[in-house]
Image (cartoon, rainbow, N blue to C red; front, side, top):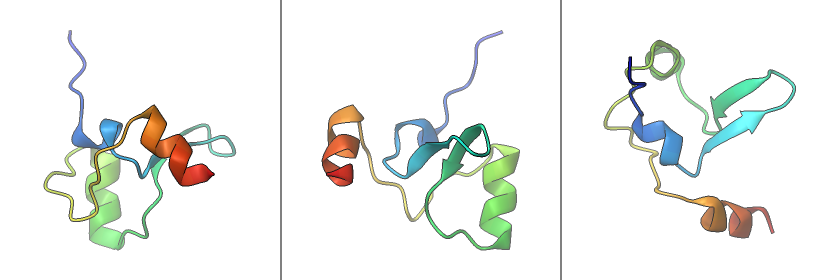
Length: 61
């Protein structure tokens, strides 16, 4: 079975949380947005910003 890649996986706000042990959205989502994010059906996100390793590293500097 092929894993469906969400839009979140290439968003610059999608970051790994070492304390929790999984990826989280770094934006302040409201309760409904959080439920959609956890359920894996978070589409047409108003916070989505395309990012790759280089843009993410530049953000951290």
